[in-house]
Length: 66
Image (cartoon, rainbow, N blue to C red; front, side, top):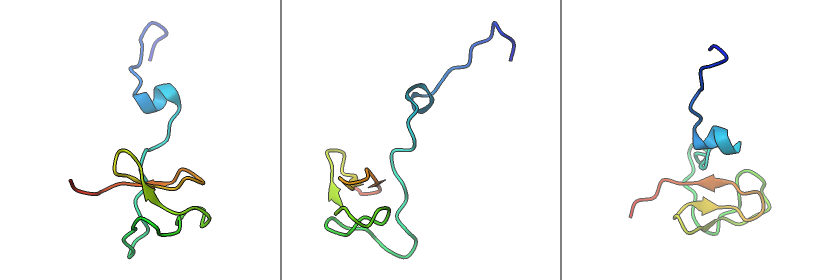
């Protein structure tokens, strides 16, 4: 890429964000009230986007149907 060409950045690149959701561990369906599989300290609960989220470490697992 030459110095006068510009790359279009995604929102993740622009704000330095990682993926919003992490898939749950294989062989286990996560539910509200389960311990967090990432940190083991928080308790998963649904956030405003119906993603199971850990309040301790921010782990998120999506994939529900509405």
